[in-house]
Length: 239
Image: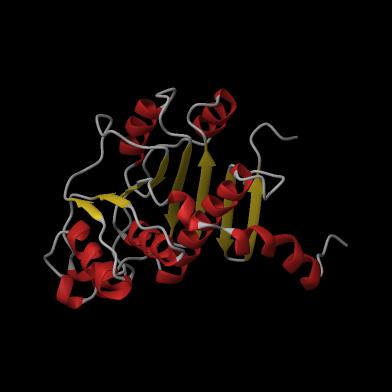
C-alpha cells in the first residue's frame, strides 16, 4: 500500500527533468552563498546541468580538513574557496564563475535565484530579513545539514505564506560539533552530496513549474534522515 511502481515513478518524473533547458537561464546570474561542503557541490551540480552564470560568495580559504567533504583537493589548500572553486569548474567544465572572497550579508545585492549554503543560522536570518519583500528574489533554496540528516527549503521570500512557513522552522545555532577522526568534518561527503542533489532538483522542478512543464511547484520543505533512511516532503500550510 502506498508504493509506486518504478515505471510510474520514471514516467512521472522524467518529463520535466528531460525538458530542463539551461539556456533559459543563459543571461541570468544565480547566486550561491557559501562555497563550503554544500555550496561547492551545488555549484558543481548547477554547472553540470548547463548553468553558466554563477556568483559565489565565501570569505574563507581551503583548509586541510575541507578536503574530506568538499570539492577541493590538496593543491587548493590555502586558496580562497571562491577562487579554488572557479579553478576547478574552469578546468573540468570550461566555465568561469564570478567568485567573491567576501561574506554575503544583508547589504549584498541578490538576484532572482539564490542558493543559501551558509553555516551560521544567525547569518542566514539576517540575509533572509533583507530578502523579504525586496522585490528581487523569487526563489531561495536553503540547505541545512547535520551529521546524519539534512533539510532543503525552497521558498519565495515575497510570498507571505512562504515567509511564515520558513520562519516557523527557524532555530538557533546548535553548538559546534567536535571534529571527527584526525580533525575531519563529522558531516560525511554522502550527506553533503545528497543535500546538494536535492537542492538542485528542487531548482529544476521550480523551473519546470515556471515553464508550465510541471503541475506542482516543489515542496517547500524536504527532510531526509539516514538512521534509518527516511525522506519527507512538506508543503507549508498543508494539513
